[in-house]
Amino acid sequence: MRYLDPKADLTFKKVFGEHTDLVISFLNAMLPFEGPDDEIKEVQYLNPEMIPHTPFHKDSIVDVRCLDNKGRQFLVEMQMLWTSAYKQRVLFNASKAYVSQLGKGCDYELLQPVYSLNLVNDTFSDSENYYHDYRIVENAETKEVIEGLRFIFVELPKFTPKSYSDKKMQVLWLRYLTEIDEHTRVVSQDLLDNPEISKAVTQLEESAFTEAQLLGYEKFWDIVSTAKMNISSAIRDGLERGMKQGLERGMKQGLERGMKQGLEQGLEQGLEQGRQEERLKLALGMKSAGISVETIAQLTGLTPAEIAAL
Image (cartoon, rainbow, N blue to C red):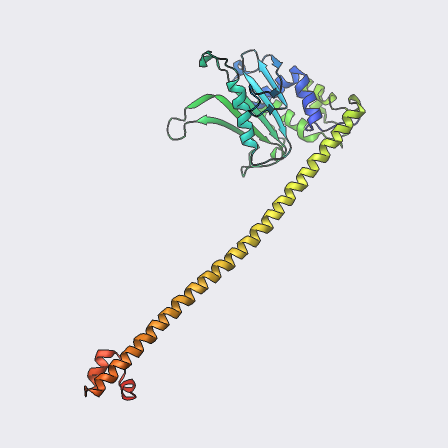
């Protein structure tokens, strides 16, 4: 049996964007709900493209967008490469989903929470943890939370399977995302023993896709590979430019410091030379007037030998 990678755009949207039971299981496993009462019971899919009210505003597209029976919205994205702008994009999309709930004249109390779940097949933080939960929190004293928006980021490369009895489904779903790809021929039995995971595995069977879809799948990975090379090249070029600019800046600063020090030393030497010449001229006049060498030395700071040589 041949399988496709569940992280690809084609497969991810098929598994989680076409099967409500699978996305419910996935969201309940991945989101930080407080208890069973908070868990999702049923969902309906919404258009993943959030079209602005006017053509002058930015369009927004996510991989999966759905609404549960409590009115909560869930945005799910599979991000293959991390970029510095990705968090801003996530914030923009979730905020847009949040504000789009209200029509003109509606009460703000009708607003329901928006959860943004982001699976990242890359690393972006120095933390050893793979799971990152962001909320709007008062930072200094009360730690009070402003409800409405919640952002979850999962760094898939940092995930390692462990025995979490209270997070069993989270571990299974993350194993599903990280262990299966086009090189997989046999799926682990403990994944297949779970009904939801087993169903999700069958969605990855290569035979379930048309030839056109498989070509699109290969094109997707070509694009990802090219993007990785471009990013690596940009980073390398940036480092080289940074090192070159740093060296040039260091040399320039060193030259400027050298010129400044040389100028200061030259000025100081020139002033000292001028002062010495003035002392010699004064000493010569005093010597011509018959003033004693001792007195001249005390007044000018010259040595008796210097005065005698005049």
